[in-house]
Length: 166
Image 1 (tube, rainbow, N blue to C red):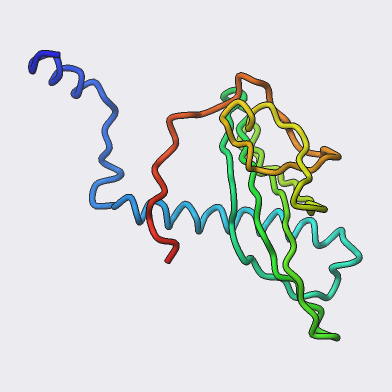
Image 2: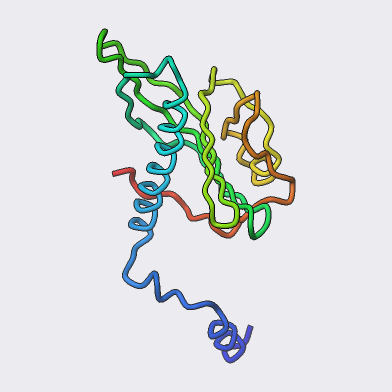
């Protein structure tokens, strides 16, 4: 492409002023903080309804696979896998469990879903995550979450995650 045409194309691109002075590392760290908070909101909602977790101390261990999907402008959802350390304060016995969470936003309202994954091999179907190649992201076999359609995706949000987890 000739230089003049390239300059015109660049002028038509949206401004990235909001990103000036922010490194990729900071963006990834901020995204992890935000996602960690969201999965714990979903987990706390699940914990309130779970008789087996009542009185247990729980903390996020690791945010695993995640997938961001756009069904349409008013239906956006994010799927996550994460692990939580669950400690019984009476027995001091702890375990680490794998969970699935969904943050779904419709018309500006957030909805949360969270479910334990019974095994490392459990994997329900999600057309939206599959269409993005997110085959390692596990979903509950029993459902309860939005499975999307094969046209759901937002592929331009990806960034290489070569930044340390510090």
